[in-house]
Image (cartoon, rainbow, N blue to C red):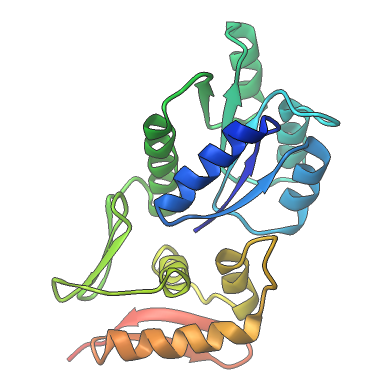
Length: 222
């Protein structure tokens, strides 16, 4: 899954980014509000972690613009401000959660996982497609109770497909979940990852191609 992290304190930003990458997330890291606003308007994310005290546009302004565009992306706000009024203001603007600095990285990871579980999987800790099971907290896939060995890109594609049951995802949408801002996104590369996944999924779970539209994950009966 691809998330956006916006934090202008560089050492903290790097630490948080590494922690989130360590649990398998694709992280775009930005340091000011204008860049964040542009990225949120043009890129696809599963979640945003947004500092309040940003240069050029503060976190509240970025959040307000996001909601004014009608985007329902879950947002976790980071703040050094302890004033209850600031927290209430952020929540009223549409923030989904708040975390005050200083914080433990383990708490941030737990909050991010909980938000992804709530927003993408309706609060469920597991997502199933026939014998394929996705454990949200551990981000582990098993097929017929055997763990699937996936590369990070294969994992990202399969996560995107299983999180949207019954929905066709285009190659462009999948590429938006797989590649970060500092990488060259390639819709054609998605075909390669889908081909590899089909081999690993075998005969029990299919990634169905809808020509001109994209891919759909479905269980095969019998």
